[in-house]
Length: 322
Image 1 (cartoon, rainbow, N blue to C red):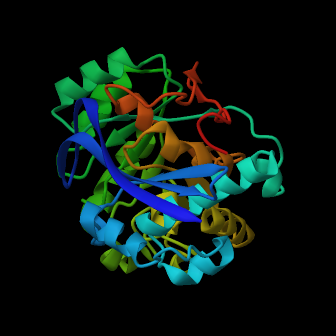
Image 2 (cartoon, rainbow, N blue to C red):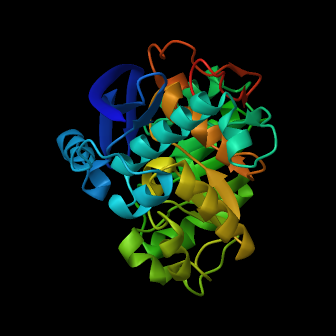
């Protein structure tokens, strides 16, 4: 097999802001693996929060050389993260094309169905977030980016502008334990259904024993199955992202292990194209919450992109992936 690794950039429809900063484009790594007759692709987004960069991820993939391992051996050849995700998803795509079947069939999964997905509102002043919410009030789930001491007016503005939408929020590690304790009851009053990662991953032991009027979901605190042991009694749910887990192989295993331990499942994404979302749609089957809106935030998606309608994201066509 031969492997090709390239960087691609997708401008965003508008600036996207979270508590850690803003971006205007999605910079991704695309891996293509070919056997000469068939080729498979995978996409990943390096994330600086986890010490990743475009050159670093591409260098990690280059260590594989020309002897590309199979999916099982790959789990040991590369650590969990964006590099392994891109290669793993490319290998799944290649295997499906070689077999003339779909990835869900190879993985022993039920035929995938459309999934309701959240739509993310960028962090900003309350009036701006309210206007954004009004434009998207038809969507069934809105995800609100937060992470400051002044977050309640933001949620109130969104709730007023989108009274029928379900609300979930993501603090991106931006709160202290004291701030969480103060804010959480107000979020419950406003009908928020989920709080993602309120405290920094390294400081989330402070959640032990605190009241949870709204379910709490681990994002930065949960990467792969090795993370699960440290999450008990702190979180109600976990957010599975293929870029954290290191590919579809581990993401499916993480989903099964987390469910067996009583965690609810959320499946999320980085800001990326439909090629990155496609395998995540398989993981999101039956999840309590899906947040696979990455392509909706782009100015233009790639060809054969995922189909979105009525708040749903549909499974990928074979022309795209899998």
